[in-house]
Length: 125
Image 1 (cartoon, rainbow, N blue to C red):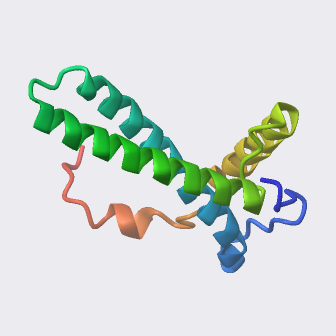
Image 2: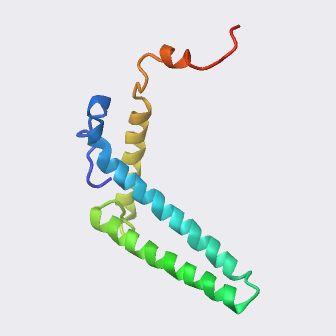
Image 3: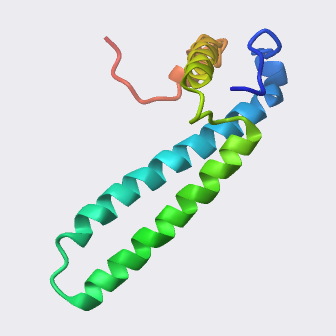
């Protein structure tokens, strides 16, 4: 998270909008990982195609995903969300992301869970 300093991120849920840049970065990373998975799956599928027509269709889809991967990677690099040429910096960003995620997980999202739990139809023991 090159653009986010953990000391400056206020994890108070009253000001949760401070985390919108983190959500954008997280969504972009999730999309990139999904694209990579699609590339892998299409490459495997390409080896299984029985007809030239199907092979052409699968190859076109694979090429479209590769183009998407390139564009999204470039966007993420430009925004400082991805550091593929600097593994040490990427590692530090990953550590920072893990620390922020851990802090978010500790938030008291339901201060008093009793009213919520009472809405479920559960057997009384």
